[in-house]
Image (cartoon, rainbow, N blue to C red; front, top):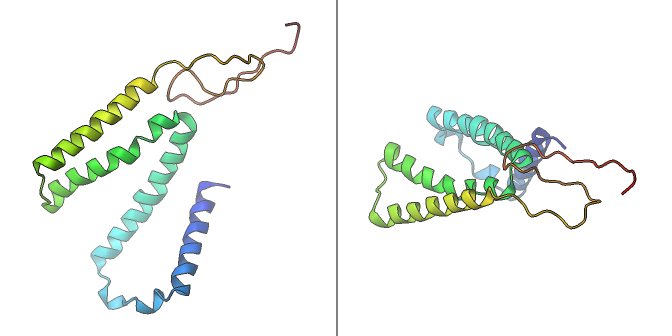
Length: 146
């Protein structure tokens, strides 16, 4: 199933669930501003379509340990963007937490780049490439005399 179909199905299920729970009856169009509509479209295009498509592609070509680091880095970036654009306070505790997160991600990236141990069963094709972000290609071995 393609990424677009998955997102449409997910959106449709959320719409059905919101109508079934009465969320649609509590919605007031008078509270919707042009700024909120533009923000919603920005999130739809960049936060959902572009970001999710990039994530799915990254999962296909990189090691899971490397791809998973986005979950740690995104909150740190959000805190700094909130400070820069929304005037949110950055205190010592927040800065220390951000430093720990960035250091942990750096360690994951550093130690994930080591070559994988060779498998004991040589009849099985290798699933991972030696590099962290190269497309994973199945290696086939000729079926001949061993």
